[in-house]
Amino acid sequence: MLDCGPGWCEASLVLESRHLQHTGVVHAGAQATIADHTAGAAAITLVPAGYHVLTAEFKLNLLRPARGESLWSRAEVLKPGKNIMVVESEVYSVDGDKRVLVSKLTATLAVIAPK
Image (cartoon, rainbow, N blue to C red; front, side, top):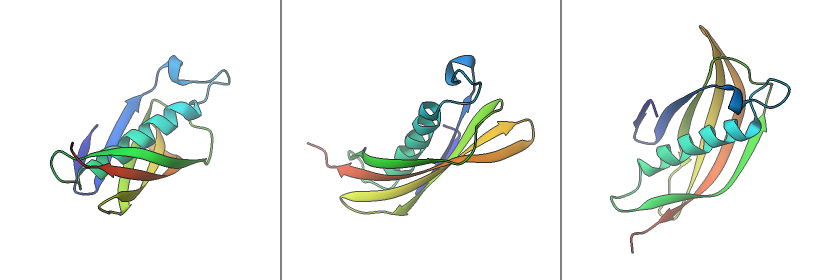
């Protein structure tokens, strides 16, 4: 995690060979993980103390092959709610000063009350 505030979060992942598939591009699972992680972190900034969030569903659009030194993700809550939130994450591949949008995730998160 790099930074967060009410309803948003940014995170990055330095890419290693274990994040790549056999063709040399970043595996969709790595992109999905950082996007989901960032979405959950954005959502939790809007729930009361002691509450948690759990991803109930997400859709990941892979827009182009991801290559580079790292991934950078930013998530923003589109619809906060007492029981359900909708969050969108964008994932960029970073190579030097170049940042390219490679995938977008839309997630539905359940808000879980403390026991």
